[in-house]
Amino acid sequence: METKQPDTTANRTNPADNKPKRARGFAAMDPETQRRIASEGGKASHQSGRGHRFTPEEARAAGRKGGQATRRPPQANGAGA
Picture 1 (tube, rainbow, N blue to C red):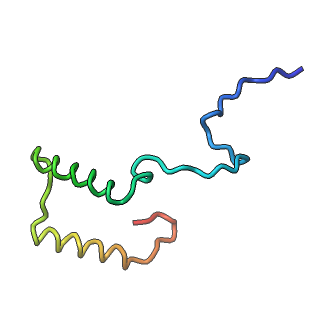
Picture 2 (tube, helix red, strand yellow; picture 1 turned 90 degrees about the vertical axis):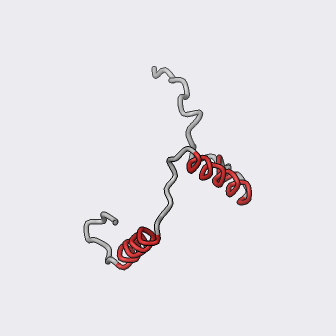
């Protein structure tokens, strides 16, 4: 006779449940609230001295690097850029 084990999957998503997933965290907030909170984090970062401001040269280099990455053909082994 087989003994039934306690259900330890209570917090896992069960594909048999047809309940839609609810957004959590930032995804559950309206865009304006997300923007306000993100702005506060950026301001705090700069006030603490850990923020970074791009110089025009750094910004150009970053844009050039991103443009090159998007034009690169996909690699055969599936490893992305």
